[in-house]
Image 1 (cartoon, rainbow, N blue to C red):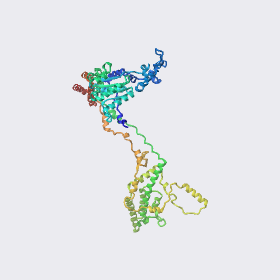
Image 2 (cartoon, rainbow, N blue to C red):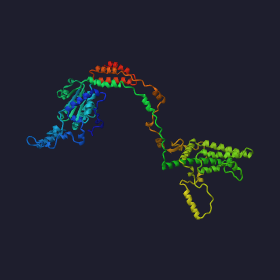
Image 3 (cartoon, one colour):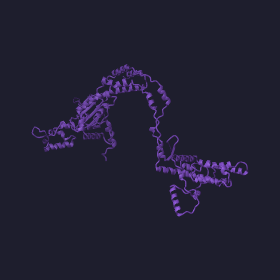
Length: 625
């Protein structure tokens, strides 16, 4: 457990990265020269850089495999023995086994064909040195590592060596060398080796030199380093690592005149002279008129959804009937309205049917309630109003008896409207109206939920055959949801006058999410869904909501005339030439800073059609240089 390395310490960010497009004109040629030197010092890099031919990839045969045949593998040496037979002695076998166990180099390196089949290098090392800001550490070395991404890269900078608080820097350095040997061919990368050598202590320097010398001479491990000092200013130990006479030191030159011109050419001649973005195109795209989409077809409810919807609607109407029965019974029990509790006897008043075309009384209202004739309170009030209207119409204001009936009729009107206004919740009435509209749209009649055989005929003696036939007919006609009224249960559950908003609790119970779907101009479907499903149906995703466009402002932009683009290209060419001359001997970081300064100035004038003001860039260049 004590030797385990935490995952946070094992994860190391790779220093490899490609050249950014902006600095490619400056450093692409230098990078190619460095890669050429790397291929010469580290031949393994040549295999990583070159691309395999399509024919070899299709055949699955490498070029090295095609160079030799089985017959060449058994070439006879001058003494008449093959190469394998010469290595078959016990002493040589022991030596091969020793090297194959202790070194990461294959045994084939010791054979005659190893030189031809495998690249060989002797302690490959390369130092990229130049003045401060030449780009050797910020651009070139990471680009080289990016080109050699086939190999494992191990960084030996101070952040890696001193970043792990649990281990000493010398132990971290030794672990990196062990991993580099195990995964060879690999690369050891040391940025700013001059500063690194002066900063680390003597113990770490001695450990580094000892580990470096322990690497076998022909091991394919490249040591790549950078420094911001001249080669002569480095310490003697570092000079011994990178020998100038062996071509292991690459000096970074300042960018040439041609490279500097290519670096600024696109910025000054092309981007500075580019016209502003057209507002008319953006407005036309925003105001694009799309054809009106056809309304979506109404969603067909499943049988289960239809059953649940009908149950919810019937529960609502059941509460409505309970309320209407309570109001009607209270009116019937009032002695003032005793004359309106039953139909008018036509034998006593023969001309009543001639005067009154639609008679109505409280008992008939109760029967209509039992037969589910009322879907809303408004329908109930229409029949109750018909009672007092008929009384006023038939009883003229001529004698005292008729006046008494007229007074009772007016009292009936005021009483029933006062009860409805005082005890009925408006939201409950809205739910009843929506339920009626929903059933009307679905062609669902209220009568199908009414109790069967409400009107019972007098019993007559029938033969057994006729009784059986009538019973079968009743069974065929009887609906599955028939309910037999229960008078005792009704009497027990009939609410009394307990105060205002008697049905406020019921209306709260049925305040559900409502989804309204339109299949035409006047066709309405109302479905009561759960809160989750209602949110899913009614709420659109935020990405689907298009931003609003100010039409007046858009039309104003469309009517504006686009001014002509004014660009003096001759002066821009002179400006480019001036930049090329003024930046003679500049390092990469200075050129990048000037490039950013010019970009800022061009960005400030990006909306100008008259680009003559960009000539002030000349003054900015003079001030910078």
